[in-house]
Amino acid sequence: MSLPRIHPVTTNSWKKLQQHFEQIEGQSMFDWFCAHPERAEELSLSWDDFYLDYSKNRVTSETLSLLIELAKEVKLDEAISALFSAEKINETENKAVQHTALRDFDAMPDGVAKTLKRIKDFSDGVIKGEWKGVSGKQITDIVNIGIGGSDLGPQMVCDALRFYNSGLKVHFVSNVDGDHVMDKLRELKRDQTLFIVVSKSFSTQETLRNANTIREWFLGSMPESAMSNHFVAVSANEKAVVEFGIKEENIYPMWEWVGGRFSLWGAAGLSIACSIGYNNFEQLLRGAFAMDRHFRSAEFVQNMPVLLGLLSVWYNNFFNCESECIVPYSEYLKKLVPYLQQASMESNGKRTDRNGDVLNYDSGSIVWGSTGTNAQHAFFQLLHQGTRLVPADFICFKQSLHGNTEHQQILLANCFAQSEALLTGTQDSKVENSYQQFEGNKPSNTLLIDKLTPKSLGSLIAMYEHKIFVQGVIWNIYSFDQWGVELGKKIAKSTLKAIMEKDPNRSKNSSTAALIKKSV
Ligand code: F6P
Image (cartoon, rainbow, N blue to C red; front, side):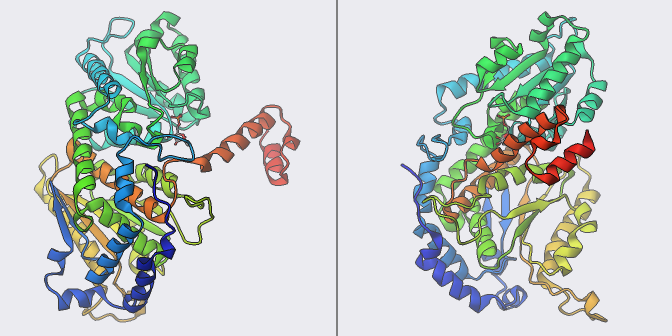
């Protein structure tokens, strides 16, 4: 079973959507709301403890039917079945795509279940102080060394769920910036720190450099034998890990059939399990699993990831929006946007379709954003009065975690007010001049979740994973490879050689050569 290969622009529904777009492009959502008081009720969806209000979008019931027709024409249903099969749908890398198997509590592969048990034992041991440092003291700090998918997911989740922290301090070192590494090491005691090197390939330049620097620092006053108490690895490349000096029993697997940016659900989530405890880690997985079931079984019209994916295609390909903005109204979700940038842009930033042809329509939108209300005092000016149309996702929670009602009410009021202002603009209010005019009619989704818990966060992440998949299916691209990062990595190797050998002329490009010359 492979993914269908249907050129979206050649479908009937795409043509109908184009005509329909021309009819409704100039219409006002505000007028639709006035004419149809049930709009919010009709264009909203409740699932579990999520409430998605997508009524503030430039869509009518006809738009939605046509978008769903498009999903059917490109055989999204077959694609979803293929995603949940063990088939090699990542055809350009000849790999299966099975991150959902890491959280499939109904049919978990043996290796995955065994690894979960090891994650439990390891994290329990470290949290309870049974896993000791070489001097016999308890571990107080965990450092995750990895980059990209081996960093962004675990880091975002640890930060988002720090309310549920087990007591262990968890740090992240990703950038090859030595100043950051040295800065971090200053905070740590060798005999009470555990380093987790996460790298699927165990060949990523940044991770290996950082891991080597940290190992040298550690061995500065510790014997080689102490490595086994203080270094563990998560990788698919056991041989390279052993050569690095980490014992086999301290190696946790990463599977070939799980892409780096989807790896937090498995052993790459070791730092998460240490940070919030295994039970909470399992709740995170169970939340994602619940979303997987929703995605597989709900009718498209009631399917959150499907609707979000279709709306995004609508703006990207018909309104020609270049970007979409994500604004969580919770400081706990500060790192959600960088995480989603990799999830979305590494997946869908592609220009060749599944037939090998260059796209003649746009794919992956640019994802950006920040937390509200801070973002309101930064870039919201452009959302309200700029020349570009930027659809926004507002994410908020009914309850705060620490129970401060006044703050939560202000936070929610701001969140709801912003989407309303984007919708209405300055309809009735008197404005003195065009500088004070808000044209309104700017689209947004609002996702209201009961509470930020491990489970709801798991569902939220899986919702976006599947939204991204839906977009990729419609755009007829391969969403699970990332060839686009390779060229820069290759050039960095020869550039490094030129810098180390102080030989700028190694670079064939006069600009790079001049930069090297100036820097050495
Ligand atoms: O930058 C590309 C990439 O391959 C990502 O997809 C991946 O998450 C990251 O590098 C890290 O790779 P690794 O886990 O092999 O070190």
